[in-house]
Length: 320
Length: 246
Ligand SMILES: Cc1cc2nc3c(=O)[nH]c(=O)nc-3n(C[C@H](O)[C@H](O)[C@H](O)COP(=O)(O)OP(=O)(O)OC[C@H]3O[C@@H](n4cnc5c(N)ncnc54)[C@H](O)[C@@H]3O)c2cc1C
Figure 1 (cartoon, rainbow over the protein chains, first blue to last red):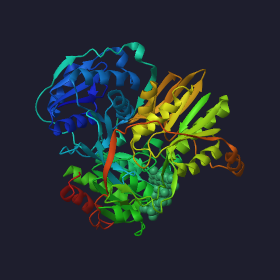
Figure 2 (spheres, rainbow over the protein chains, first blue to last red; figure 1 turned 90 degrees about the vertical axis):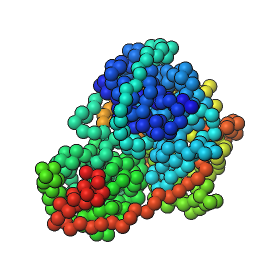
Figure 3 (cartoon, helix red, strand yellow; figure 1 turned 45 degrees about the horizontal axis):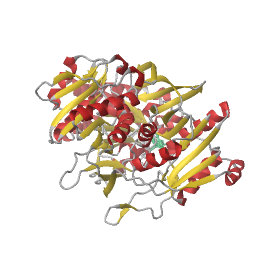
């Protein structure tokens, strides 16, 4: 079997979610793992994928791939799948994977499971587990086609670095500039924190914080822990915090190692978006708050008293 | 402008999820169904706003049996002009996309909208598959969309930031928070919806590419451990030594 993994990159570096996708491909233990990258990136940056399990990376560095266009990208990735004879194509289930996996699945007439949280079970059939009903259940999908497309849920397969270096080869996808229809006018990125979907540590706060002016301590706690901030839906609806921090069934789903919820009641729609977090800590002044039922650790207390003490405790911990 | 909005029926957000037939079938008994939130709040409302601004029409399309009619009528009450239901209980995302593509391919829609994901199967797949079947550009996770003279200007969420782009219509867009504000249908809309056309179309023969063979509920979390509010240092110790997450 041969496995092709789409390698997304940004500012000269392979994205963490793509590293995880390579780790997933290698862990399938089902054959050679080849990466496909598009757009300009240094060979050295791609060679590092060897340490995550790729034997080779092919790259079409044509400048018209420097900005993301799902139609042109899908054509190029499908061409790479044909050329390498790939049976399985893997994406990260992130903003580019969410645009590409469905397209490539149609091009290759390959069944798709998106947001995989486990490796495929291959005795008899090819079945993959993913989260469904917004975290309230798991569903096992059997892919009925010979070729398969999988997108891997971020933070489900840690990007552990090993040894080795991948061969990097130029690849001509045959997809020209005329295939590109999207013009990217500008990209703005926050550079100082880990993006929420990729974050391993998340500090999240809700309406219990009373107003946007009180987020200073939440941000400070996040900075001390090296965590990313998030919030409940009403907090973002009311404009206290930006939309992209809204976690839950109608916001984004996160599965960090640690989710700290401060002044959030734990409504079912909020829990849906965070229930796959490995460890959940709840800080709430109401001992009856439903969130405590879904938590591993709890502090019953006033956030305005507890959080400053917690910040001091983190500082002491880091100094020790 | 001719706009098409794909709407899906999903369990209510508060629904308790259970399964029957030895965990192979979702148990719809006692479940209230709603229009998938991102389809309703963002895709549909933005399409209606664009029509109000530029003229044209908004068609909603659903792949489902007549138990979808309730959410279709709601979409018409919010302001869509007409509706199409492809008469089939869909088998997977590919089935949905292929049925819609079969209908839409020769109708000349300028923009086809989907919500970013459904809250039941959470696939994010229908928009991407549909765009490939129609050979159109696709912009996912769009939080802002304007159209002028056949050119769409869109911003979309990417990890830790925003991408601003432009693209000529026709195209497929998946919509999310930021694109519009939820609209509650009023009495006049509800009355008008009863008279708006709902066309039922027989499905094309499509083989599903995937099958769900089993469901499982997540394991219960082990019992919570409480830490004294006066002593958060103990929490940090537990997170480091016991949970090993910091
Ligand atoms: C269709 C639909 C979709 C939805 N989707 C989402 C979603 O995706 N995400 C989401 O989050 N919500 C969602 N909701 C909303 C959800 O039902 C809740 O209303 C929301 O999560 C509550 O936010 P909250 O916990 O911040 O506020 P509240 O419910 O008001 O809770 C505030 C909490 O703070 C505590 N508190 C107050 N003061 C203090 C203090 N000084 N110190 C410590 N604790 C304090 C209170 O005890 C309380 O538990 C959705 C609702 C619907 C109907």
